[in-house]
Image 1 (tube, rainbow, N blue to C red):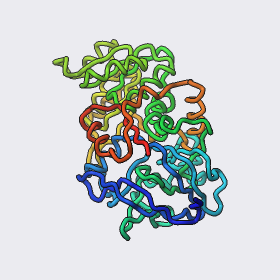
Image 2: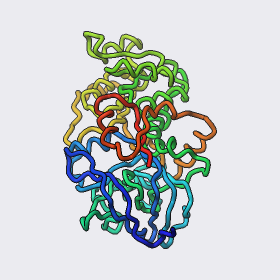
Image 3: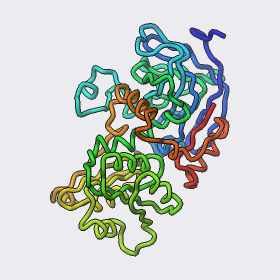
Image 4: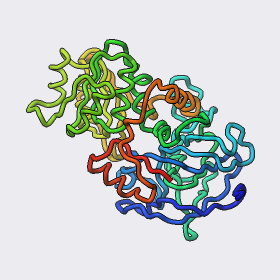
Length: 376
């Protein structure tokens, strides 16, 4: 049936208010307007950032909302003026768009588009309206993507065409988790051959950091987590040593310093805990170490440490999406995966049908999963 130009009724996981489970609802998805794309989502991952919104830890987010930002699908229809994708194309929605015009896009060292909804939190399309309704009520979008639905509408700047052979149930991780972790190592830290690294937190993003550190040629990669069950997978991806802070009386940064003759060259915080961010900074070498903040902390969090920690020569850095310019780099990352330059299979610990989304989030909170992919 030709659905172009028509409203589509489909299933979506609606979060009506924070602190509540998702409710599978029948929603209406309006046709794309000019420079917009309607996408049939095939697979989508569950990310900790989504859970922060569920728990109300991200302030000023709009409800009701359709979350999800790590998806892959097929273009169903396009609005007037769209030139970079066409119906039938395989695509990945981009939570960090590329408008190509703002300073963030033009600046070679930046990948943060000013038209991203991450800072503004409007929960709407570029024209300040929504394409989602449920029982006559407006439903908000989430950071330019909203992938917890059978169909979504995104701006053309928020979608990337990928290889026709891409396995969508795997490459959906390139929409957030893999790219964020891998890029934090190769783009943000710029890990060098022979260097030492410490990775705090062994979820999908932390393991992706390990992949990046290994590809970059790090000689020592220390994986740190309070769950010993994650160590086998960390070693599989390239960790040379695994450490559980619970096994030591001394603070973890002192343990890492002792293991590395004063601290690692590069440390990565992949949890979103400000105390661990300070530990990561302290774990880096006093005069030449770099700590990279990868995890998303709750909105009310603040980071506090003595200025002397930086004055001696340490550096602390951060970037969204691993520093990749999304629309330009995502197609290449997918092609690299198809060429087996890296593998993401082991990052996906569970596959669930979409209607079991609440089970997937419980597994995330209980530490049972690395990455759960929901399939429609």
